[in-house]
Image 1 (cartoon, helix red, strand yellow):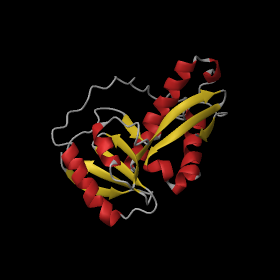
Image 2 (cartoon, rainbow, N blue to C red; image 1 turned 120 degrees about the vertical axis):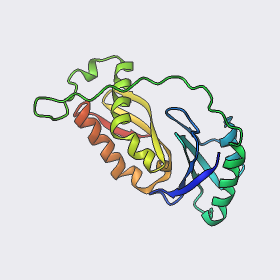
Image 3 (cartoon, rainbow, N blue to C red; image 1 turned 135 degrees about the vertical axis):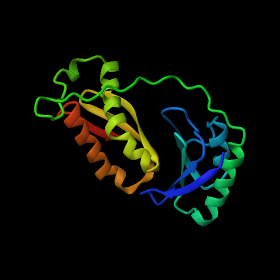
Image 4 (tube, rainbow, N blue to C red; image 1 turned 30 degrees about the vertical axis):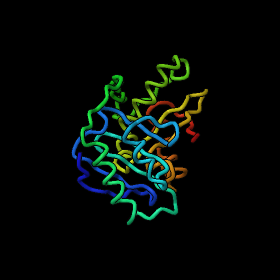
Length: 197
């Protein structure tokens, strides 16, 4: 695959590398551990010392560097590694992901929260939260080169982990986190809280 362009993200330490083909068929994948990483493309990127995380979504690879790395030196190296590593690339089979349900609106056209959310099974809660994130949060994060993973739901607390450019972005711990919590409160249950892991 060829890198068609490099796009900045709100995080000065992360850049999106847009490819002319898909790197993942659906969902996303995130890598932070260079030693345990088994993905062949991410492994090659981690050979560049300054690379600290790699995030794949659709046809985008977001690379986050350490604060001391110089993009003017790194971008050409990353472009070359991506093109070499994906030359004969085939998308690996990935487990199918549940299709998110559509939001429920009340008679005034407002989002209807789920009063029985806390009584549901863990799997139902997780599916509901992920459906809301898939619709209202993840597309915006992906546009900026990032994503998020639901780590767990414990009582009224949804613990999340940022991926890609969001992982070290200055706004991810304040404005973005507040937005995510407000979306969950408006679309799932008004008592939900969000915390970063």
